Length: 78
Image 1 (cartoon, rainbow, N blue to C red):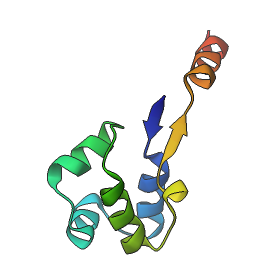
Image 2 (tube, rainbow, N blue to C red; image 1 turned 120 degrees about the horizontal axis):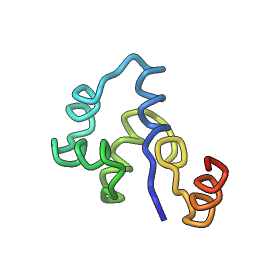
Image 3 (spheres, one colour; image 1 turned 45 degrees about the vertical axis):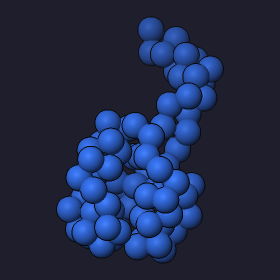
């Protein structure tokens, strides 16, 4: 399974906020922001901090893609 934070980046744009502002407001480390930039897993605690700052649900900031769906999308690209 693959994680995507594209929803978070779009939400930040909509709210006129950048990654540094989010990091400071949510009390996140630079490494957490870096992990999200690489679509790597972060702790649930970090996700909840982000949700509190942005007043949203986890589903508004992260998407979990099933491997089967990813394989189907790759097949369609060929």
